[in-house]
Amino acid sequence: MQLTGAEIIIECLKEQGVDTVFGYPGGQILNVYDELYKHRDEIRHILTSHEQGASHAADGYARSTGKVGVCMATSGPGATNLVTGIATAYMDSVPLVAITCNVGVPLLGKDSFQEVDIAGITTPITKHNFIVKDIEKLADTIRRAFQIAAKGRPGPVLLDVPKDVTAQKCEYTPVRQEKPARILKDPDEADLNSAVRMISEAKRPFVFVGGGVAISDASRELKAFVEKIQSPVCDSLMGKGAFDGTDEKYTGMLGMHGTKASNLGVSECDLLIAIGVRFSDRVTGNASKFAKQAKILQIDIDPAEINKNILVDVSVIGDVKDVLEKLNSRLHPMEHDTWLSHIREYTKKYPLKYPDTGLSGPYMIEKIYEMTKGEARIVTEVGQHQMWAAQYYKYKKPHTLITSGGLGTMGYGLGAAIGAQVANPKETVINIAGDGCFRMNMNEIATAVRQKLPLIEVIVNNHVLGMVRQWQNLFYEKRYSATILDDGMDYVKLAEAMGAYGYRASTREEFAETMQKALASDRPVVIDCVIDCDDKVWPMVAPGAAIDEVFTEEDLS
Image 1 (tube, one colour):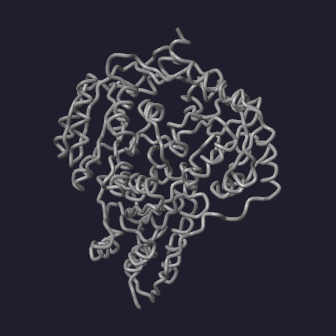
Image 2 (cartoon, rainbow, N blue to C red; image 1 turned 60 degrees about the vertical axis):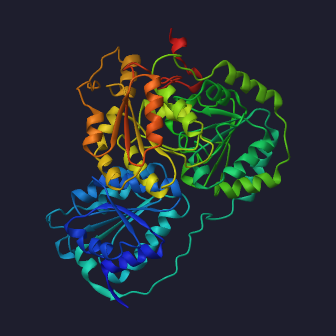
Image 3 (cartoon, rainbow, N blue to C red; image 1 turned 60 degrees about the horizontal axis):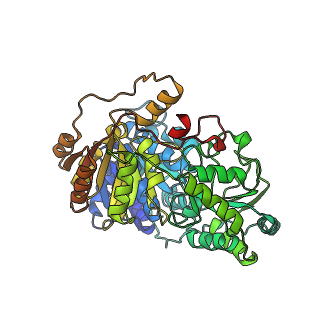
């Protein structure tokens, strides 16, 4: 049948099982939006307040479901406003398809109104991108874009379609969607045998879990693996929930704001088993001093991650789920009671702690955990509140912490929370924000109100850029350059002006009371939580230091 390019785009989205698109219209993408209107009963369009909010919402939708998220924007500034969200998805391996529409083919390269080379701009931050100048290639290119986004190590793909292509017609033949296979090839047998030998010989193994375990849906296989080798477990920020945070073998996060038990344990182990991690600098600290007593076994789907940041002794390339299944079938049960007891002593000796009185970030996170029974989806912005959310909420399942890890995108959380709430309408979705982050995309509260989403926005309000101030306090002799936000902004009035409920809490009792109201609400709630400007995230590793040089406030004094 003969269809226009815009009709083909919509039909291909339906082929791929897309039920929700986040976006913002404009002149060059009007043909596509006209078709979206005709298919509004099949594909829900969420109009965000800003294109960046659309890209973050598609990201949050993808992270919380495992599906490919979809966002749309028009040419020029509409397309460039997606860039931060695309880069965020790229750094955290999130499957995303961003569809932009450019000026017509005859106008390309002529500095036309709202023309920009979005394919060129996004080349370094996408798995692949396309500009489709031939309508005959449009359907197959869309299908390929979704395959690339989801296959292997996931990531964002950009599809740019000139406006005249959306208006032209060609023959369209529907194609039945096939779910892309995640496993690219079987792991190398020699590598598997080397891994089994290393694990069997280890006396002090430590498992380090990253986001790849969650992406691969390998939590069950990981649990069986840990039980078989009897090892303590730590994780990265992106690995939260891939291993049950309430398990007695779990020691907490590793790295700059990791627990002492994790940092000291990894520094003392004789085998570090790194699964689905990329050895970020925030995890390793001084790379030349990282895990120097250990042999390192790395399991990852992406060969580019092997020896990129940390040199390893053995690697197994493959889908994490598949690799763990094969290792579990070959390994014999082990016993490391002495080593586990040693690490448990660290856990008891160096617990996470905060002041017994007053409202603080850690208290709020623990209270949220208690009041939600650990069943909420927690989304965060970036900074101190993000680290507290990682430290004090116990994540028992993957995809329950949604946060910008690699890029550290301030302003990410509210859009991502909208995406997660749209995808999971019956679940409690809570975005933990700093006041600095909230200011960046707070206009998306209007989106949440318009969509009648019952998400909860908790602003950890210290009237400063908290994490930057912490560094200024510790490493810049308290020169607080451009980090003070004490300008009289009233977030309660702001929330109410956009149609949400607004509350303020400055005591523990007020916070518990307002959270109870928020959890019972059927529309967006913003809670302005006032804390001290000099509260800090502990423990900490100074930049450039080894992770076993981790220190707390008590160590400083």
